[in-house]
Image (tube, rainbow, N blue to C red):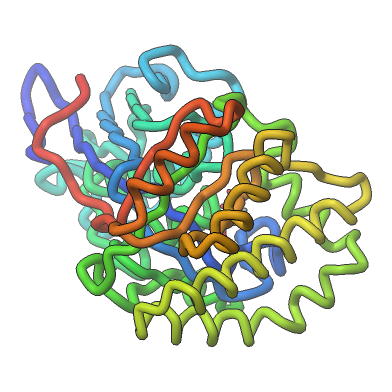
Length: 351
Ligand code: PMV
């Protein structure tokens, strides 16, 4: 973050952000431009599925350049990153003291950026890479531009890029307050990571990018006759989840989280056109989790906008869960996560 003024004028910052898994999910939007959701959502930020991002603003660079997982990024990802950088540059330009040393000639708000981002997990397959990616990008770019934003402002800015990214700003157990405007739609922590060592074992059944990105799924939600039913029950689900987390009650949380995931997928399946995120591997893991539970192994599932299955359990049951997942041929990999920290700025850069 130290500006080097001279031959090498540059502002560079790096951040690490965890993905998050929602127990009560964001599905459907009140405002698609601002990514204002229809309901509050509740999540846990993950320790072992994260994105590292370095952003460097450079004078003389003609366009923003993005590398994702050590390769040049595609056009769609680059456009989304550029749009987020533009939002942050606009904030920096509006600051009264923009420019290093108040010298407007050295104002990074007009500079393009070089961005490198690496995920510790497969991109676009229902582990929220957009959440961790845009949380890390927002915090690194804001630091690179010297922006002084509150946690709520950073969370709201991350939301503009990807709704669920606003939750990855914070560690542990997090609630996104839906709000009704840009400024009041942001996430807050309601319990720190050390409150409860819940386990999220992510059964990866596909590392491919999903066919229907979540933006498209959100937009189609209003075409489902089941959306109204989902929204009528969501406040009850939020209350049940909050109480279960505060009481460290896996059975209560698991029941509420499974019901909420099934309600989201019911809305997706009954949208026009229909949106299917599950594959045969998803179904195999869901059936297995239900059978384990009948055998007395406490484990519950939740599924985001992709085929992979997040299995919620407790540390003492993890060896059994791992062993049983190992017997399901569709499971390619298991990523074991616990509650992790919020976004952190790093002193080491990716380039
Ligand atoms: O933030 P988006 O637009 O990628 O939407 C996330 C949607 C879900 O992951 C399915 C649910 C959630 O709340 O994380």
